[in-house]
Length: 186
Image (cartoon, rainbow, N blue to C red; front, side, top):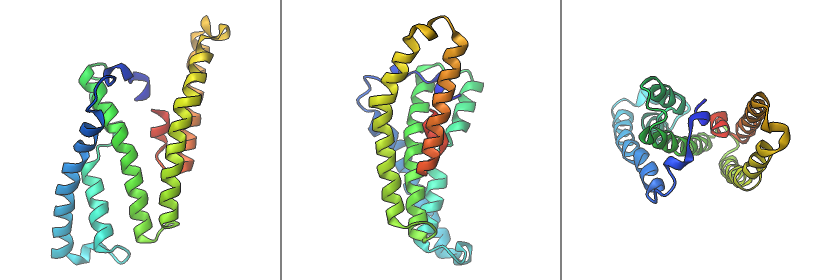
C-alpha cells in the first residue's frame, strides 16, 4: 500500500535527497551506538552468549535509528499526510533508509557468524544493486508500456491486477535476495 500512494514527483529536483535521507539515520545511529556501547560496558551480561560487543552495539544502533516503513506509512495515512509533499518525502527517505537497514543487518549477521559471512553481505549488496538497475532500466519501461497497451486501456481491474502481480513478484525477488519484501513492493 505504501507504493500505491508514493508520488516520485515530490522528490524529483531535490538535489539534497541522498544527504537528507542518510542524515536522518546517521545521527540516531551514532547516539544509539554510544548508548549501546555504554550498556554493553556497564551490563555485559545483557550481550548474551553469541554476541560480541561490536555486534551488540551495531544491532542496537540499527534498532534505534531506522523507522519501520510500514509503521511510518500507517501513521502518515492516519494523519492524512500520505499525499502531502512532506509525507511523500518521508516515505521516500524511509524507503532508502530501509535498504540501508537490511544491508546493515546482513553485516551484523556476517560479523556474528550466523550466516554465510562477508560473502553473503557482498552477495546481498550486489544483488540489491542489480535488482535496482533492472527495475529502473527494464521493468519500469515494461510496466509503462504494458499499461498503455490497448488490452489495459479500458480495464481498470486488469491494470490493478497487473500492477499487484508485478509488486508481488518484486517483493518475492527482494525477499530471496535477503532484503525485506516491502522494498520490492514499494
